[in-house]
Amino acid sequence: MGCPVATRMRVTIIDEKAVHKRHDYISILSDEQTGIVIDVIEGRSGESVEELCQTWQPFIKGINTWFPNALHCHDPFHCVGYLNKAVDKCRKREVKQHEELRTTKWLFLKDTANFTDEQRRTVFQIQFNKRQ
View 1 (tube, rainbow, N blue to C red):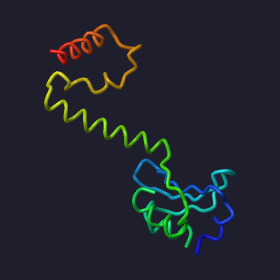
View 2: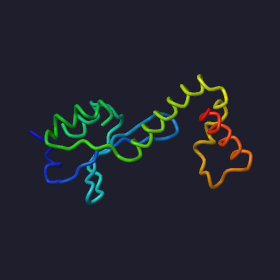
View 3: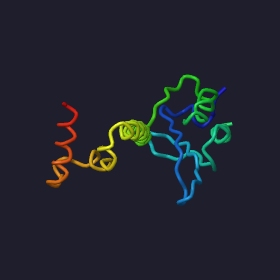
View 4: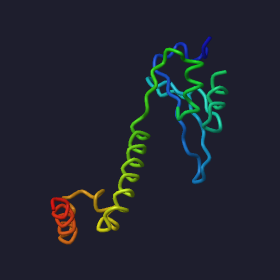
């Protein structure tokens, strides 16, 4: 059992792409080595993978069905997104405990080489308070 087109490929990618500014998506099956798009289907669900061959959670089921020996990898774009969400969740929790952090979200995302004098003072004050 397997996807006939994909059996000749060594590295197959299934990824979703946003279409338009709304949350409309397409799922794309492609050969990573050649960049050739094998198929495109509307949606980004497990059913989309099933339709592509007769990775969010719904993708994993389709991958395991059609490519049982495949390694499941997340692309850097999504890994950075997951990490940013986790950092923001932690930051929100910290703000509830430390009022002085309330307006510093973008400050901690900024390159320190580009800090203004006021931003340097703010960071210094936060670090100083942390030590006490």
